[in-house]
Image (cartoon, rainbow, N blue to C red; front, side, top):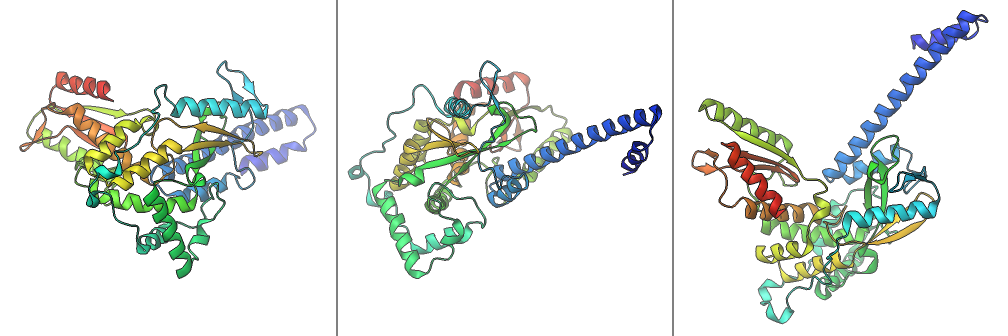
Length: 400
């Protein structure tokens, strides 16, 4: 405030010294305000990304509105660089650039033509999965957070919370029709993708964080499937996985690493550690391998069929701020914004890590060999010798 007052004082001094000091103070204040604005926007964007990472989509949506998204529900057209580095502002060309970016991110050359599960007649009745109960639907609706953006069906989540007994029965019947037939409504498989800037001067698609808007009714059945699958995979996930699990978090992972480090110091042993953050790990999940893992884990047939259909039929509609949309076919990765994705990724990464590190590792606490500490896609590898650790890294790269 003192510089503002000083600038105001020199503004009315009509001589060379006054004009010089006024320009200097004006420039200093502009740099300071630009720096403060940049820090503020980066802070908000980091908070939004963390809310998305931890599944707090209500807080994510509220923070998004702080950035002025109330009037611009889409990718803002301030220009995007193409592959040659040219700034493009034409809406149709910008949309095409975004479509290509999403396609390259989620598509793969050998996209499976089908993810069909085994025929129903080959499956025992007790392995198909039970009907969806009305109590499951009610619980899923109760867990939905208020104030969330709508999906392609334009049905607000708050409306579902107002359903009476008749509405709940009708909705449960719809859920069971989808569950028994394995066919998803089109509005449930198509998502609208918008983007948030990671930094103030975002000129590339990679400078944005993409956000998917999913139909709230689709989220209900996804929540039901999530709860059923969670119960079955909890014993499969190792004690060293701290991401997206009830009662566990980053503090537990850090605490475990600290205990291990202190233990090695006490017994005067060496500990070699490698910290790995897989690039675009959630976007590179192989669907065929995922379906194989779900079957081997004992997930019910109806649930596996629903997941396979959801992934094969899904499409992303990229939306710009003026309403222009383009459709992109997805070929890999877990579904962004879906509550099923964290547990599917946890199971997928757990099985791949076990396969890669089977028989490797030489670091023991007591009689137990400890190879990893995991938090979602963040991985810590541990070994007593560098050569052993390098072998573990090489094997992970080969498998993953």
